[in-house]
Amino acid sequence: MILSYASQRDYNAMAGEPGQTPWKPEDFAAMAEFMTAFNRELEESGELVETRGLDAPVHTRRVGGSPAVVTDGPYAETQEVLAGYWIVECDSFDRATAIALRLGECPGPPEIAAAAYADVRPIVESSGELGF
Image 1 (cartoon, one colour):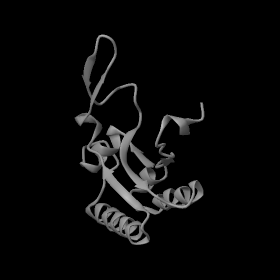
Image 2: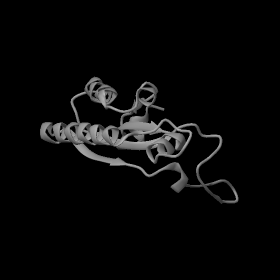
Image 3: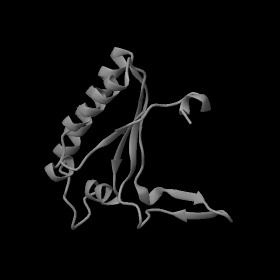
């Protein structure tokens, strides 16, 4: 699984809120073009299982604790949140890493692109694969 991250601030910038690095219409167009091509290539190679983008952190609910507590986001203690993911079926962890590295080519405002990152994590099918 390839996980990409953002912050509420990033979502605010994309929405054009004052005081944030603004996204211009051409930034969105370039990002959409890149993501469409990126996803199409993964589909054509047979490596894409699923991909989704997630809504802004302000639309999140965190559930947990004892007794159970429900808290609406965003959360002050959280800098980054999951922005989207790709599940890929490929030959190796190195291949999944190479796919994730290509996300660094996604266009956007330079200061946002410079801080962007993704995590690559294997998906386990059973507790026996966890190694502990």
